[in-house]
Amino acid sequence: MSAKLNRLFFNAYIEVDKLCAAKLGLESGGLNEYINKLINSRFAPDREETLNRLTRYRGIRNAMAHRSGALDQLDEIDKTDIKWLQSFSYDLSHKRDPLSRYLRRARGYVRRRRFFGVIIAAVVILAAVLGYIHFFM
Image (cartoon, rainbow, N blue to C red; front, top):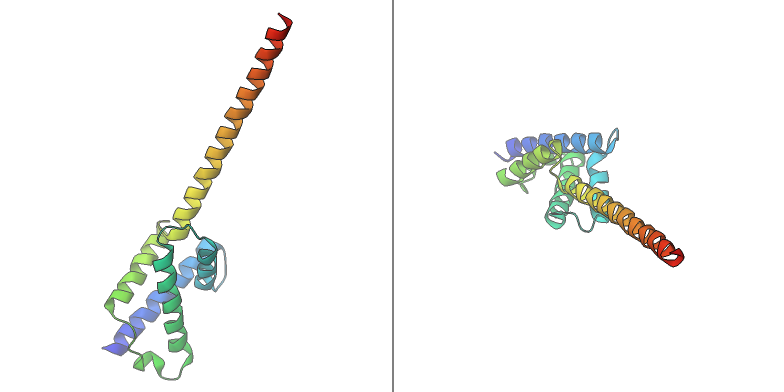
């Protein structure tokens, strides 16, 4: 059973890696870059759990890929790990992953800051114009 789970895990991991690469505009190494970006995005929702899982899964995948016979012998994963990767893959596809949600919030914050900056500038200009008119009347 372990070998079958390991193969399912390995395939799910590869799928997530490809989705991350596509999301970040890379040829390969998508999951590594996603992890790096997540490390730098301190306020991303669900950051800690996602970062811990992806880092752990990367280590397991590397062991499977680089240790002789590890794909058939490792017993560090279970069905919930595979389900989590599949769920994360779905979230990536639908832009519901932590980085996508973080970037959406950040863009909204920038838009609000710009909007309020324009409002404040308009109020200052209006006050200056009204003060100017009041001074000469």
